[in-house]
Amino acid sequence: MRSGVSASFVLVFLIVATTVAYGGESALGGEEPAIRLLLSPAPPPVPALKYQLLPTMYERRPGNAAVFYGRVKAERTSFFTNQELWDKIERAQDAPLEEVRSMEGLLTYEPWVLKDLERAGQCASCDWQYPLAEDGFETLVPDVTESRRYARLLNAGARKHLALGEFDQAVQTLKVGYALARHTADAPIITPGLVGVSVTGWMSDGVLELVQQPGAPNLYWALTYLPHPFFDVRRAFEGEMLCIGYQLPQLQHVDSAVKSTEHWRSQLQTTFQVFEEQLGNSEEDVARFRTMMALRMLRGYPLAKRALIAGGMSPAEVHAMPVGQVLLLESAQQFAACRDEHLKWTEEPYWTAAKGLEEAGRKSDHADRDWGAALPVMAFFPAHQAAAAAFVRIDRQIAMLRVIEALRLYGAAHAGRLPARLEEIAEVPIPVDPVTGQPFEYQLEGDVARLGGPRHVGRPLRYEIRFRPEGSR
Image 1: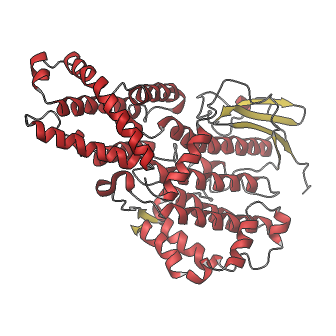
Image 2: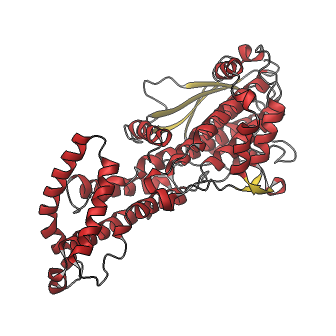
Image 3: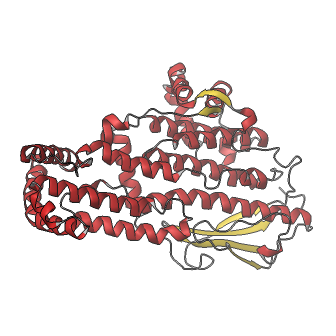
């Protein structure tokens, strides 16, 4: 993507997300300090789904959410250019609730902006109409910038409601944010999905802050009623691969009967131009790239011929092909094989797919960096393993919130006590850790429960949970 938004965001994400993968260490020990939670027991609401964190079918309305999200800023330009108010919104992101409570005018915008965003979130569909077929890698995704801004606005509003003890309004604001996250990610490319991950993380952090407030409603069933998994990873991964096909149509129909050497030379030259535009950032880069490509083809042509013959083509048929066709055909077959090695894992749970995606990444890296393929097509592959790790982090965060709320349910039914083991909670199902497929780790020592799981993408998962004495605030 040539968008500064998409390119920089993915770059930063990949640097962070690929640095540390999830390991087998216990999260209940270690040097990282645990997040300390002071909770109050709370029974489930009646009816069970009194609170919702996404619009239901009953609230759906016809229309394209993308249009309504675009109108929010277009119709409220004076608000979005009010720097004084936006400075206050930024301070409200992580200021103590006592400070947020005293921020005058923080919610003056909310009635109409929240209504606009709520209307967008209730739309039955969301089509951002990204021109992937026409622009391929160069597709711009400016909408994600606005989504992140809307999310910060909603986060500030939710925290103001929490500070004022207005729990129902806080839940409603977070609900609008979760809908925004799903709609932002509702695109056949990964970048908007990663922004959706960020937005969802902010909303889930808001839920965690909410459930720590005295008198907060129990949101176990609201969290359980969210989609699992929260995002459609398959659509994003398939769309990324389609982008490669759109950008390199020369890899299509390369097994045709055209015998003209000039035709295949032209196809190969057009492919080189795409590589130069996407992989070279300066004249020096382009010069080095051209030298590398010349060497790569000299080495790759005989290897490509052998690979086609090993794949079932007759030697006579391969020897009769123009050089350009041999190089393009072998590259197309390598691309298809590596593509499917990535995509075949997308419907598997993360705990079974992680190693498969890691191995698929090694194969595509080999085909690119070690010249295992005649042309560097796999250089355009997104980092599926890192992206999958980011998506599952959201599922893990939601699952952990469900466990925390299950503890509050248990406490309400058992005189304010924490269970000795998670298996003692008979009131509701306890989710497993989406990263490992195993139960979350849990220990009770005195009146402190330690809850956690193995490190994942650099984030330790450790909580220390206490119940506040009855009647205290």
